[in-house]
Length: 234
Length: 372
Ligand SMILES: Nc1ncnc2c1ncn2[C@@H]1O[C@H](COP(=O)(O)OP(=O)(O)O)[C@@H](O)[C@H]1O
Ligand SMILES: [Mg+2]
Image (tube, rainbow over all chains, first blue to last red; front, side, top):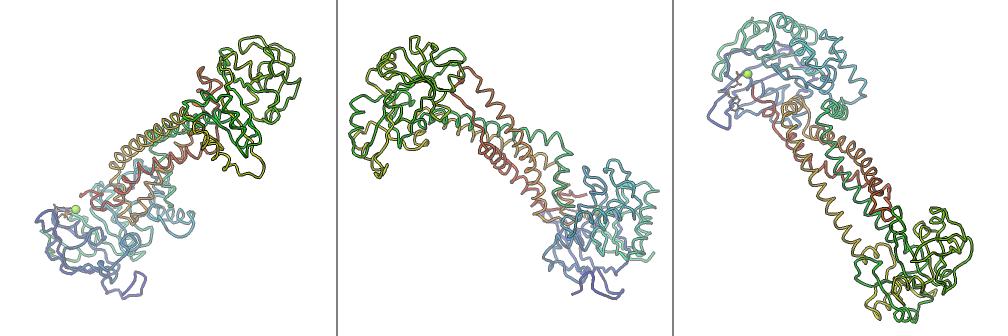
């Protein structure tokens, strides 16, 4: 078993999805109908397809927010069914960015990043320092005191990324992160993702229904009706 | 970020909700603390007389609604004196009189001058009255100070103008606020010849007090023997009712408070469902979400307790000045009243917050985030 910090060769998949089916309990909706895919370490992959094709369902399985009906989801070499402390997995091994409502409205940008470290060891000062560094990296050094309502959509998404990276996870999972941004902010945001991958080797899985956005990734996986229909390299 | 700072932040940022909850808590705390302060005050006033005499125990009539209604006749007093193990038994008559509007319940004790010393009364100025005088009296030093009376001055009470022949001290503020008269003079004016209200008994050294009280209870079943203030509370039916009413109201206040807190919490947590879903999604544990919500309740409980205790002290002081209660109620602020207030707030908040907090913590994060 490889932990997130274990040395591993670049070609080894960091995410492995094998024949995953997800049927929602309350009906006969087969949201995922035998999905298999792999993502290599430090790869930037986008998952695209029409609304309702199962993209979010897949991402939620990767985030351990839900369990597959059948099939295997392996992350960092471990079957997620074997992970006992799922909170810790969500906190330390993956970072999550949603389309909306990523931030707590009553907390400042800085505090919104700090809440990702609820029981980080070390003094609160070092947590604040870490949060400040991340904000600076996102180009938001001057915004640390502002609450979400005082930030633009693009700024909010960058705070969300900073929050997702707070515990230095190897993987960033983003569900329609550009869905509510104007085109200038979208470009800016995608540039940031590419830089993260280049500078930190972060593995990125981004769900989007927008083909132009998807093209920013190294590889695009296209889904339809709960299945992978095509994969191509940009 | 430590959860406590998120807690404080949330409480501070949602001021209207926090204020409403803290006030609900404060109100219940105020009710509980005021009632207990008043109840304690009444008990203190009622039991203070017990502490005037330096007796091993006190005897009153059994089953009287108010201790001052107790009547013990001369024959019974004699039988008490003759009981083996009794060294001395001092019978005193206790009456109250309205002197004026500011002093509606002035305490008058009828006691023989020869009993003053065994009873533990020291004459600090002047001299005791004579046993059969009809217009002599003594004032406790606090009462004398209060009325501005010195030895030799006149004082109208007990149906006549008396000469204050002495000032006494009992070492007890209740006793020192009272007055004393020759026993026959007080019995005569109140038309209860030969009757006393209570008997203070000193036992023979070496004889266990309990054996003496048991013997008296057996021989004189119409009497209650009281060795502690709390037994007195049980002998006095009025006090029993007052305390029962206070306890009932306090429980009601806590229950109503808990319902208000629980209801408000449920509503506000419902609005914050997505917030908790997000926290769980980014790796907060159920325990951490539970702590967050309970922590918010705890902070409100502390604020509510502080405000509530403050309000109750103000209320008790105000009640002391209600004409019907002047002189009867000495609001008794103790640290125990404060702890009771804090406990009330904590119990109430725990009752009101635990279920909403548990719901917030146990909800599946995806469900809470809302499917988008
Ligand atoms: N919690 C759920 N309960 C029932 N059906 C769901 C649930 N979540 C998603 N679905 C259904 O599963 C299918 C895939 O949804 P989703 O993964 O959100 O698609 P996408 O993100 O690609 O738009 C849709 O038909 C959707 O209605
Ligand atoms: Mg979706």
